[in-house]
Length: 386
Image (cartoon, rainbow, N blue to C red):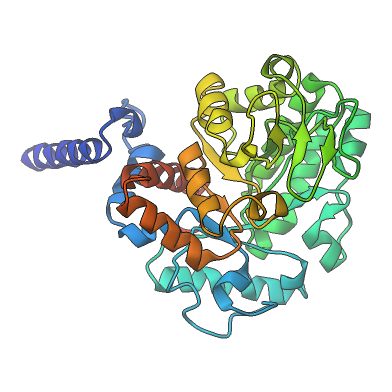
């Protein structure tokens, strides 16, 4: 009895410390009903975050290409036992140049996991683009049969086919050590859709159903899904090296493009990726991925999304032509993003964030909010070995 009382008091003290560290109890929630007394992922993530150094917290925000860590032009294996020791990132993203064979890929992902464990880091996201059809980096490289594309599934309107595609993709990704897939696309195709992109269709309710079904297939196979590309890339007025220009009002998008995202949020989608599009009738001069109006105002505020927000690749021209290297990451964090995907220079990005914190432009509390969200998804989806 006395032991139980001491344990309860200790947990209350820990809860109080975690809540005080964040300043808001909303980030620390305990599920303590009679059937399940285990702390929920947000609570566990908060406790884990408190053990991290400031550098570890900052680095947890990044998903990078292997070459950002190895310094090589092409990485198919890790030649050093400590490639992630300097920058203990939250994840890596693999491309065709990182894939040669099944065994080589298993070895590479295994090396990353082992190095993270040796460095006492939290498990890594190991990510790919794998939508099915043309966007199938792993299947194309390894000669697997391709899952049907979103376009094909959309024509059938068959939720079972979308679910099966998610299951099939997770069925080969997970055994290869890959646990995050930037799919399904939740964009609704409109009159001026972007040629070459994959869409489920023009009906947002259809897109909602099929994106949800594919996500379920991925999730049940042990792979984290991510809706792409908020606020929606189904219509555009022009593309330049600097910006993808889109003329749609918020009101127009509420009744169309945002329906799949809104339903995904209601179904607790783990991640949403924000595009670099310039939404001229919503935000005058900022790409969506660095826009406070788009992320904090619309996605988090109006739509109520509390999950992980991922930027599109920050090394793309739409960003690099508009920001000094490193400042794109500061801008995205200020706007409300959590995961900084593929920065053009990891070292400069980390230093830019450190400088922004030291100068009061960013707070460590803001970083910690993102770290908690990221770790909570890793815990909930059992990424690695928590």
